[in-house]
Image (tube, rainbow, N blue to C red):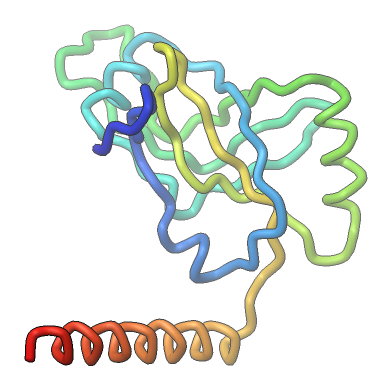
Length: 156
């Protein structure tokens, strides 16, 4: 968990940037129970297969797994329940228009704490094809090799 300018990252969805082209990002609050917040502070969340969807003009987050809090008792939460995301009405209306476009989906990229509140960074994304993923990996490998060669050259 890194700390940068008052932001403490609780969990990150690294696979999302590999599987999707991220076009825009949005910040949303999330409605959680007390034991969910305590589990998040302990870093016990997984965004891997989660997605956001607009149901009845409300933004909902599906398949987010937050492990039950160890010290929680009968008031513990259900790990995979659907959670409400909090955004202004005009922002949700804008997202409704954009997600109706062909191939766009809302993917959570990371969850973090800022000023004591839990926030979710959503990405407006479209799926990548297999050849796009291979191309990204090849570019990353080439960049790493160039940086390594420059480092080795400077040592001489």
